[in-house]
Length: 125
Image (cartoon, rainbow, N blue to C red; front, top):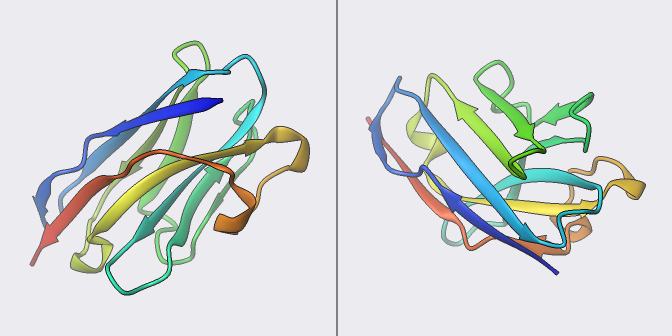
């Protein structure tokens, strides 16, 4: 079983930047695709970014392309989400998630069985 601890979320002004971290523990000896999702109250959890186990392929939601970068450090079993040029509409709880690398990258939250507890990002205008 995988467990995650997300960190890095905080209040930031529009135009600012943040780096979120997701530290994994447990069965980290397996290969996983890692993803970041976000959710605001009353809305569906939405895809933000994903990265393959070796980091050779990434995928981003159109709303964050060019502003966010996902990366991973397998030695530290940590995945990061670097966020630049933040906008008020980026305000949400951000979750990291994992799925077996066997299945490849997916943008669907239903394809990720393992989730962290989330970290709040608030962008003020």
